[in-house]
Length: 216
Image (cartoon, rainbow, N blue to C red; front, side):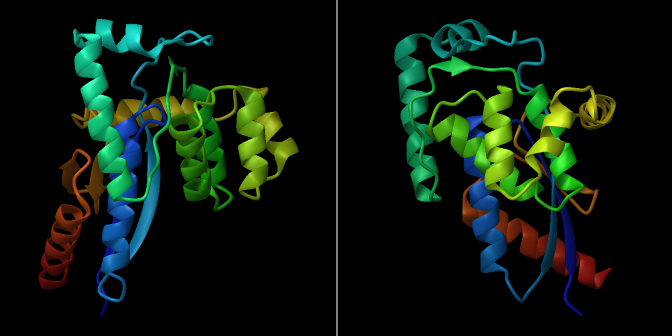
């Protein structure tokens, strides 16, 4: 019997390493085709929950938050671009950091309609490749339409407080489990893999967990 793995990918749209980690994880899952069956879910995490709607200059924000000079930030960005390219994700220039709460609400809703993964990828590309605001309703509605969701239904979600409670509860749940950095990958509600690992590392970990699951 083929082992089944439930994967919860805890992440934020604003997190560049989450884009790298997701693409590496998906390459690993592709490599395990036929060996395991994977059920992938996306769970919310906000790096900047108090970010104002107008956002903030990215360099100023990161310098203040991590205490890094601009030169070090440039080196970090180059490393991220290289890691992204290795898994097929292109990073552009991201001049601002935005609030992502509404993006998480829409992702939660998209999950109820079988389009969560597609919307997640669209959001990551919109922000990290094209520097578009993932909290702007016009961006969110356009992306919802592009991935096959009902735009007017998406508008109704965004113009209300629908799924705010659910997203807050999920964020609190995962923080309560000790997750304070992303990406974090939880397999079968038991195994935690933290960080944007290379595809080979994810593949090895998933294969090992699948083997333990079968033996158990």
